[in-house]
Length: 200
Image (cartoon, rainbow, N blue to C red):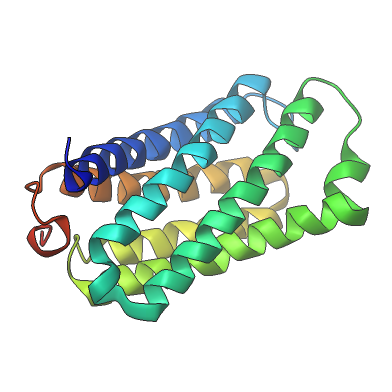
């Protein structure tokens, strides 16, 4: 398999899978603990974040020349943020199973990591969405969807008792963006990915 085909298939499939797992995880969490959700939902969200590392790198790779430094910074921050978020989601899974994790996710070094991970992912995904719109290699309207989903999901932090519902809405929008980007990547030809991936 050529490198371009590996990027296309690997990136496309992980993007679609990450989007769907993110949405399913947040839907399942609605039926659980108001703060930590459910063990199954958390596990699905954790899987989504792990896959997003590969999806974001692949999506960046096919539009790197056209997205410029903005796309690179957005990709690095998004990957760093989603990686750090994996640690926070692990703590949330423990919380959903009944362990006392409030101190872990909100105080000290681990609390700082949780905060920085969320902030890096938030800013990175916005920059990545803008870069995707500007590059025009992948569907431009997926960029605003990434940004909107990111903002709505972040708003869930301040939504109080409705936070899980707001997070599901944010996950739905973000899922649509990643599935759209993944399918666009899968529909491109093998060589060269960068130049042939233009999809409107």
